[in-house]
Length: 168
Image 1 (cartoon, rainbow, N blue to C red):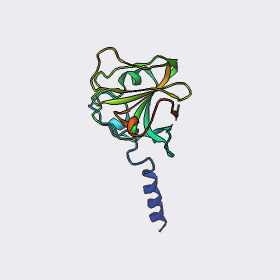
Image 2: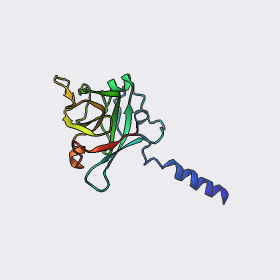
Image 3: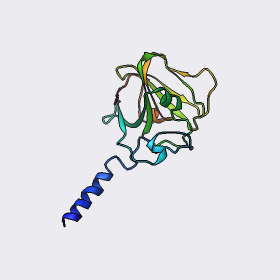
Image 4: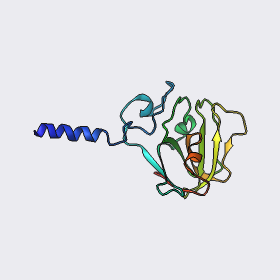
């Protein structure tokens, strides 16, 4: 009986991260990505960005965090899919004009630029494989950028001026 209870508790603990265990259900094209999502390795529960909107529940996004030069340069390049509620949060050391491109990025994305307080200062839609200047540049200085599937923000009522609670 004790062995059965232990098995039940162990089984319940394995699924607490929402099922996938990673910040996205994105598939990798085989590029050198250290993401557990791409390799299938077990990774701790994803971080959450919670955006306060006029809706009572707000919007939650499971994120991978890019906070070093290599992660930022790679971004979501080569991915063929991104889970509906997943994205990548780019965290810079200070506010500045941020510019993104879509070189080798196979899926269309939307990006929200946020200041140091988490206030969304700009939202843009980005085309897949678009590496032609001008790039997607924040309308105001920003410290964070959140990439999600194209249309995600519009479909959920996320607007410029909304605030996000960031895990960084």
